[in-house]
Image (cartoon, rainbow, N blue to C red; front, side, top):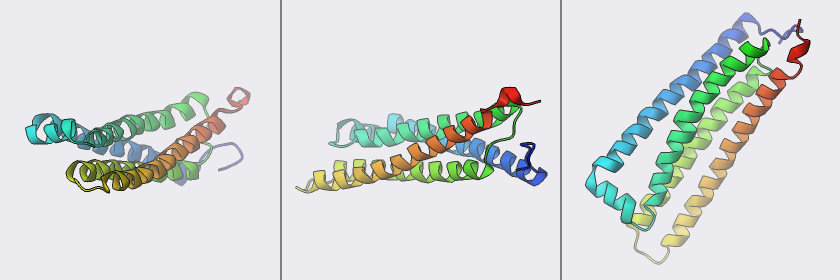
Length: 171
């Protein structure tokens, strides 16, 4: 970043690329989430499994997280990464933090969804005495990946905050 708080042309192109990656991720997660919801609601056997198996609610939580943290949050991130620098008339504080945020959030979200789904399937299909132990171990991984998502959101907030600090002093 130069002294005038302007991104170089190549960094500006890279920043635009990452804004669009957030948009594309939003689109992909929305298609996955909407399709998943249609299957859960439209396939009677799957709906029954989700509604009545011991851990079927975990599959619903996976679906909810892919929609909220994937579709909705990715759209918000893309929009605010565009709007905040525009409104504050300042370049993004750190392009590197944008990249860290994108990859950390996606890795964490995918991990959460995979382990929520795994715990729901294992808990719903297993009839053995160790089912609760298996499910609780899988849910521990949900917590670990969820911490990555939370950390990514903190990185995002910090980056936007640092972008806007001192905007009034800008000529």
